[in-house]
Image (cartoon, rainbow, N blue to C red):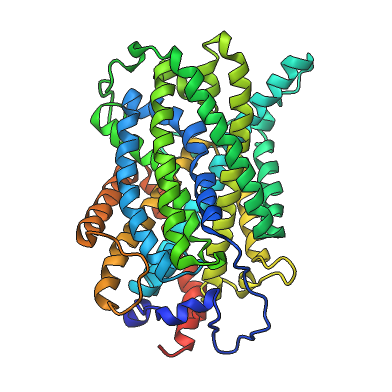
Length: 497
């Protein structure tokens, strides 16, 4: 049984997921994913996912609760780890151009049980990312309603019992009620974007490209016009005195690095679109590394400006950028632009994360580890429509019930585990399958792989110490599902490999 648990997926067979190779019994006439994405589409997908909650939501929470002005250091630490992981992702994505991302890479290198574990954590990563960003979207949506109401003289803002999470975790990680009914805007945006994902990848990427253009312009306007109001006094002390484990000081910087890691998961989402890329061997590395480079620069510039114009303790709100601008009446016009820009920007994050979630479900179902219905492809739209609807319904339920703070840390933990596995897996494959063609190769593989996995594991441990009940609960539920269903339905064993 142990040998079966760690059986690896042959790489030439794993290409069946979206390429011309098919599993036995599959008809060539069956609809498949449509390969239409270029390098430009992939870069904008990455920027669409990366630039969003990290700038418009998580940045404020990380600064106010953990790092203070030293948030810039947290972004640099997370960026270094992501750069190493991104290089490993780029080699894998070019070599194994399928929709499964780290799940597929783990299946090819470390075995089925590890692949399931990583796939289950990718579900945690993408699904909870959708819910977390949707919760942040709700805050900016209400802010925009307030702005419109101020202009028109009509009270449009939703009451808190319809725009905040009804459940939250207390310090003992127990679920308690807040008195709210449901986060209605969060549910509505997830439902709308789920339908867009259902319709097609071409429509989804077109909408994403428009939104990316808008939000990059909004960020540039904020940095340019808010820069003159920076007060260096807000940066002192640059590293606030530690007030407890993870609250300021050095430990706070690393705890914040875990949180802002959430901001970088966009390039990971790019790899889930490999099955729909025209030329994945060339374009996947461009999409992954290109989006990561652009976003890192924007994040650092944004963090410097935000903590420079407002005391960091004031930024712990669902809309920290708008909160900071409220301190400057002369920038009221910019606050309105930023609020509407954030609304658009967060929408693209939700869109790309929904695409990623459905593709992970699709890939796992193709391998028999999830019910086969989720591997169906719509005959007209050529999308994994069942997987898309399952992902959307699950995400809107979570988004409507839970707050952004808890969701963000869980997303980061799932992301860090996936990144660690990819860093280790690419090194293993260099030695177990050296003959495989690699259009992109990680430079200094031993240094990049070892250091990247070590940093990711260290950051994971910082968060795990505070959230271990939730993480172990999620892992336990995943293993229960695997042994109840996935192990007995795995198609890998039906191939006798």
